[in-house]
Image 1 (cartoon, rainbow, N blue to C red):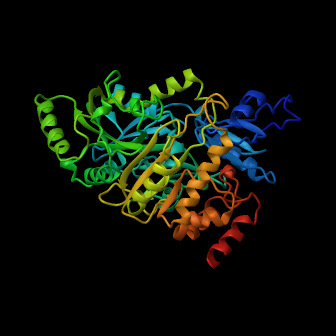
Image 2 (spheres, rainbow, N blue to C red):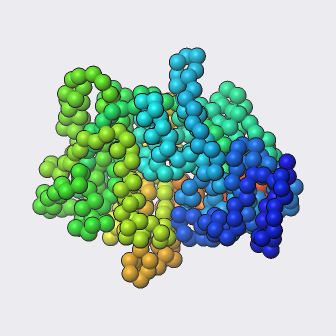
Amino acid sequence: MMLAYMDHAAAAAEPDAGAEPAVAAVDAAECAAAMDFGGLVSARPAAVVRPASADDVASAIRAAARTAHLTVAARGNGHSVAGQAMARGGLVLDMRALPRRMQLVVAPSGEKFADVPGGALWEEVLHWAVSKHGLAPASWTDYLRLTVGGTLSNGGVSGQSFRYGPQVSNVAQLEVVTGDGECHVCSRSADPDLFFAVLGGLGQFGVITRARIPLSPAPQTVRWMRVVYASFADYAADAEWLVTRPPHEAFDYVEGFAFVRSDDPVNGWPTVPIPDGAHFDASLLPANAGPVLYCLEVALYQPGGGDGGGDDMDKRVGEMMRQLKYVRGLEFAAGVGYVDFLSRVNRVEDEARRNGSWAAPHPWLNLFISSRDIAAFDRAVLNGMLADGVDGPMLIYPMLKSNLPPMWDPATSVALPEGEIFYLVALLRFCRPYPGGGPPVDELVAQNNAIIDACRSNGYDYKIYFPSYHAQSDWSRHFGAKWSRFVDRKARYDPLAILAPGQNIFARTPSSVAAAAAAAVIV
């Protein structure tokens, strides 16, 4: 099947009558695909393709293979921040165009799964699974308006990851179109190398067109709590204690964030209270509190049905909370529905759209930092460079690498710090256009680079989550011991380096991957 695509000179030309998949109208679709949520870079494609099936994805990739220097990028909901889902002068696959058909699959063992398209939003999966079947996946991201294929290509983390593992550890099967235009169904037992390569593979080895996600009975309600710390040492000790509890003693969700000791509505203590309208009594803070404070956020799920569960939950929560060293009197709690809890970030998006910051650039920085170095990072960065806040959340919370399955399988492509306990640090700036709302974006990007430089120069055990590099030497450093395997997998599954050019890992030439493979052997 031939694929017709449009370049700018032929934008008005009539495509071949039998050509498919559909190619979007050039101006609107290309402009959208040329930018992403970060708003930091722009790369206009030759065309945007709206695939209606995995076969359409395969056709687009095969067409690119026949055209010198043409590349292909899969774009979900456009929430990358450094152009990772762009293809300058290439084809962008609009994965949201895939039919939204979801299917409940019941294995002979009785296990239940959601079979969902790679372009489905996790929000769509949630509502479908809960409302139609009373079921839900165990592992989420905080923001659910991300695509299934997008988060599985990176990692997929949130406050559930310490207990249930990241999203890349909560998938049973994938349908993947590799860089040679072939469609594969893979799992841990069938074509496992491709399965694990794609998980966390940054789109380099294949385009995820469907995923099979394990399901379990959906909780009914959630006990949601926040407590405040003036000491980072106490905060980190309590957070790490919580994430290492055995399952029968553990919360279902543990996160946390840093905030500024002020009444600033964006950076300060007004961001802490739940439910809305609760009062933060700053007079309870100790006199020796520093400029940055910490909020530990936990949740326990209550299953549907059965009486007396609420009393048991109260007892379990009380026992756990009594052992924590937070500032007494600065506790906040709410009982919410399970879907409402998972959808809580939607309110942040709604407010950001109202005040204009959603459409402004987002120079976000996400890091994984080993527990070994997190206190030094707090002193140098949170209480140093960022003591006035970042005009958005500063998440900082621990997760486990391999305590109990399903955790981070080393066979995936995800690069992690060496430490068994490591923290996600997410600096999520919601900026308003300069000069009204803050410093120029260039200054914020420079600050991010300074933070990365500090991590490197201080010898921290860290990795960038959602990495963006331009030199292959930096990618080699990022993947470390996994780099040679990453290069070998690229040569196996995308030998022409067609896929995901926006990651800037491999160049689209027939010999580029072979050259990198040779270099990897030398390294």
